[in-house]
Amino acid sequence: MKKSVSWFFILVYVLSAPFWLIQLFINKTNLPLDIPITDIIAAFTPMISACIIVYNEKGRKGVLILLSRIADYKKISTKWWFVVVLLPFLIFTIIYLLLVLGNCQIPEHWMFLYLGIPFLLLFFFLGAIGEEVGYMGYAVDRLQKKYSALYTSVIVGILWIIWHYPSMTQQGRSLNFFFWGTLGTIAFRILLVWLYNNTNKSLFACILTHSLYNTGRVLFPADTIINPLVKYPEIHYSAIVVIALVVTCFWGYRTLNRPVIKI
Image 1 (tube, rainbow, N blue to C red):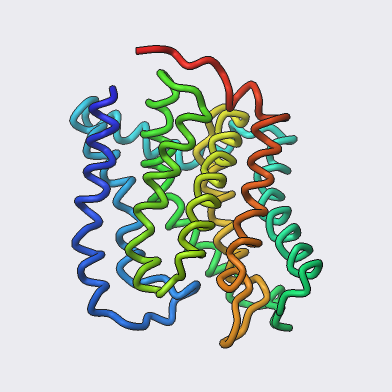
Image 2: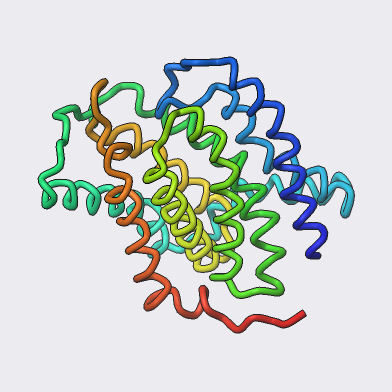
């Protein structure tokens, strides 16, 4: 099992490497969040990698079962629907309050009525499918059979943020952004695993929360001069870290700290 998960991440990096090289020759994309255009394709490498390994293990039927989980929204109870949808709003509300309390510069640029929101949501929803089918539907599922959910979250979170480093480098992010972005991304993976385990392992729940969070990053007050989420990464990502710590210490104790099964 450890080998299969290891091969999964090796495949993700190998399949992504050509796109990282190509993006070195592309300066500006004008995409939301200044996403390198090659990342749109690279975002699907986790799903492709998972499908390759599952096909090798269980054939075409196994792949179809994995992909069918993209629409497993019926697993989500009413209570957890609220959590899945409102968690991203909670994150950005806390970020905004921290920015205000810290007297940080916040542009007066709001996009709540922006007609492109449905397209943004669809854009990020498709990207989340590409990532979460692999990370949650394959890697997390297998790792949790032998390790605690918290340990699994941290391992997948670390490998997930490292995958983002080439894009962050091309975007010219500071070392401070790298540090807080790493902590925040690991914390966000902890939250996704928490949601996953509490929604009867619903892949759709993770995909929706992931896409809502990314959509919120675009809609957050920003202008052509300043983006608070980029300028103040210590505030942006510390909000996610705090929520993850609360979840881990209290509500998520049973699902994030179950005993590790020794190999």
